[in-house]
Image (cartoon, rainbow, N blue to C red; front, top):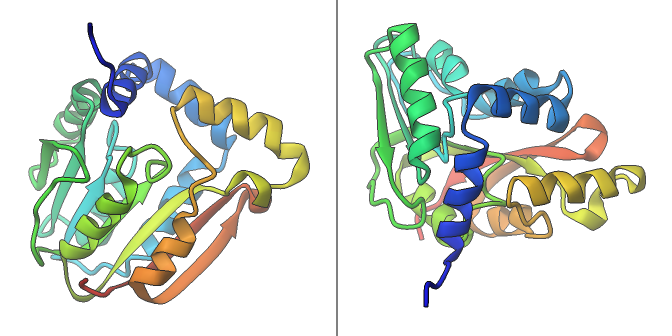
Length: 216
């Protein structure tokens, strides 16, 4: 008997979504014309400087990389991790097309990566609601930060916190991307981080939250 794990389910889902046309269609359906703005806001929350090192957790096809590149510059470092080899293939194509030599791509489970105080900022966009062991992934992000550096999460609001008219669409979208939007990620962030800042986006459907890493 073959037992399907949560990681298998996530990998299968993102194999289907990994092509450029599927990913672009998903971005339009999920964010309308707001996707770039949301990703840029999330990166801004990190307060990165040229030469910094940034970690992109569940980086997908690399949609955050252009904004991270602008923040850290050619002298900085970007590490993108993702569990889906198909999504990483798309990220690899983007890196090659743009000629970025400062990006490292790693296939890994975000809940098991072991980076210790190596980064000046860590980002997770539309994935903390997807990662099976998300609390452990959040702690691993914190461990990866240098003292007083920031992490940022951009994700969908919990179901009951979303505008009423948006809830049926949000449930459908969550099913497509294997997300569990009832996870209380903001509360866990407030428990583990200092100087937490939260910004509602897209009429309250999404949020960007950031805070300073407090090693636990």
